[in-house]
Image (cartoon, rainbow, N blue to C red; front, top):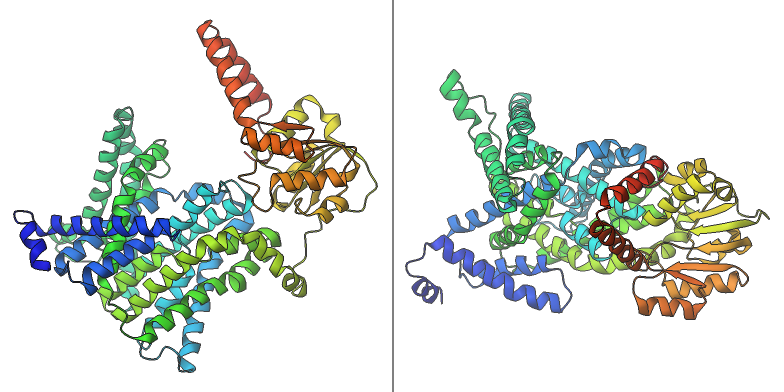
Length: 600
């Protein structure tokens, strides 16, 4: 069969033919996997296994390495674009401490677990290598940025408390992965000199890249800002400029100073530096958007290339160890990440939700295992275990993600037993009555509080806010409302908080964000609890609005309709030549409420 493809591709360079086969195999399997609701990353890996080890359609090792390396460089460049160190510094104690400690603690957990398996005689023959247990620990230390961000976007929960914490932890994990990539080449020779030289090369390249990015690159991107296609080319050009400069650091020192300091920077690390150095530029969002246009192409190549490097599992032991490693990855989120988030100041519900959503192995684990195989630290069996474990957790992730709230309810008795208490922010059994009860604080709710603070501060003092994000409670209380911690989708929480003593009950969170309960069911609950109150809820579609009215809502907000109404007013004003005045009014209104937003 391989000869048929060679004949059909006569006149084509082998690398072009092999990339074409990779894309065809990945595309066909992606359609099938999408139908089965299995993450397409698993399809790409399977395509690599089938094209390489199983059927041998792609046999040229040089082509396989080229496909994987190209995909790796651009995947790491994309990840670098998402790392904004300045934003992390503003994350507060919980984000910073959790981000700094989670990865190393989980790696230690995985390392000890792997060693324990060997002592029990499980995994012998697979995890016997000097670094096998370490690579197993590193593999479960981080979660998948690609999978988690995709699921957060699909479920419209990027802007929730647990969603924002998940993103922050993912960025910290990416930074830790950079550290691992920097130290990885020196594992066989862990001496201070080579390690210092390697880190020195990374720092030197990083400093030069930052200077160039903030001066020459900033000006260059401003010249082509109105040409999106050129931005994409310029961004990719910058990526490979840094990569080429990094791998040639020693050559430059040799030619200029006559010494070889051992400061060469790997291509993957260079790509990360390239992405990170432009992540804070004013054009970073547009660059990321443009690069994301071709992201799937490079991600596909990377995962297909990884699949081609692993052998077909001809031993049951590999599959068993992969299952155990996948289980350890999920288990570690609840025995390491959840308690850490709680101890550093996160409430236990959001700690559980975040841990559940991050219960998978990262693509960085595949990158590090791939490089470890090339460096001779691990053999193909260990690499195969990491890949299969990644696939298992990737397949399980959507199921876990959708049931994060259910997982919290299941774990609540255990959390009570471990004395992971609810925060003491609630003053539940008060007999005080309220004019307004706000259920949950999302973007619209935050703006509502700012509006009330500017126009009706007396009403704020008679307002009750029920929300489970303790991190925002001080800022809410500073505006005047009474704040109660709790999950407002639970009837007992509403009763203890005093929602039944409010004249008006409002929820501004739309159903696509309100994942732990249906808006219709919640309206019915509130109506039973508060038969005399005015109930205001939020809908996305007209059928949903009608369903909310039928369930007992007195009024339903429709943000999309309100936005369309405002847009039409702006268009009509513009046609009348008065857009400047309208903008002035809008800017004044925005400035007047500046600093009062709880969620900015």
